[in-house]
Image (cartoon, rainbow, N blue to C red; front, side, top):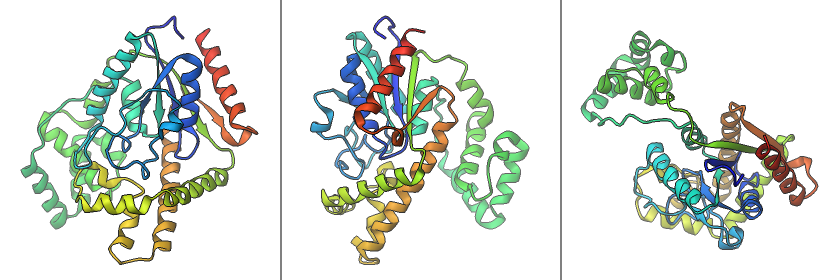
Length: 315
């Protein structure tokens, strides 16, 4: 793809599907550098729980946007896209190929589709007003109000989605534009990238789930529990506190549940997250899926991915 100055290869898919290893091999073959597309790997001090690639797994390939933010920082998709675009431009300027690797669907879609973000100040007084209304009138009252303002957005929400309902009302209150109008405006500019996207999946879902279970066991062997203890001792308050891998162990750390119970819950929550990841990426018809259980070895999977990339380069 060296003949294109705007190339972008992406390797996406669910956790434990092998994205890291495949991304590195693609970089080695095509002269690339990895740009992480993971909303939790950006944080410092969460190496095990977020499955950050080790130096051995990186195999000398530069990896960007990993472990640079404090765990107390609230980090937005708009901030990620701004940083990622700068990194990708720098990689291009050095004649290298950016390879986007990760499983955070919102980060991926916002970046490759060049979504623009309208920044507005959060009106905390209005937010509290809406929360109190929800307590006294019920979430359905807010959803009905949203339906009168933005019926398209409201149709996609259940009254249990209180946070998203409130956010949609906040957007209209702050900007005078509905969430639906903003989303349409945000997509007016075409993507600046010539995208080749590979997704990883498994035909047998249990095959993927067993990989997830094994990964959790290995994380525990590598010190996940100690990492979780250090994480909560620092009293995090930002986005990082939502990371799967630490919060599921907190009941054990607090003496409220057994380690076995917490580990089983961690495995279950990770499997559910993988299902949500696949649901997100399946909506993007540009992604060419490879099924990891179709291949007898990692080498065969790498060969299939690289052959697909070569074919797309010739189009």
